[in-house]
Length: 203
Image 1: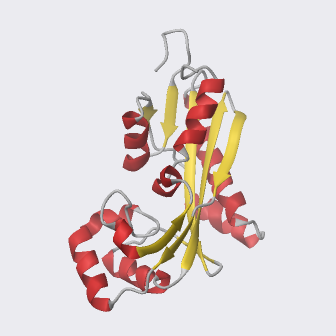
Image 2: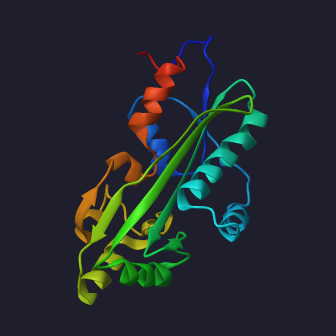
């Protein structure tokens, strides 16, 4: 990825999908979860009337800033994703029963993912961007939903939308508009473009 004179990249996230995306793209990085109270930050911003994009960008930024203090010479990559359906912001489901409730709400409707990332070095924001994929779930049957939940298992609890496009998720949808990687949780092509500008990747 880099030579020894270039700064390392740190992913401020415990997300397996983000780490795997970077690894599969040949980008070496240290991955470490940032210790922030996401629920409190989100609640405070929502109380002030912040938009979904502002919330996801703030969370991505805050995650990166926390680790920027620990790794002052590194480029820190923070990321966050919000799902909005009919004006309601959804969090990751706590259990399979809540995942079922969410999917019943999503079916037959369109929702938007606000996928933000921040690149920060020494506390300075170098890049802060958001992609907005839009997805429409088909009006699937209760039998299909039960089968989907049984086959998918608890791994869908790691997804705010209760789906993994790299797994059984495509069966839920009638239409998808937007960047594939952004749906998975990281606008990978935009991230790589900016890492090239920072000489972390070869141009």
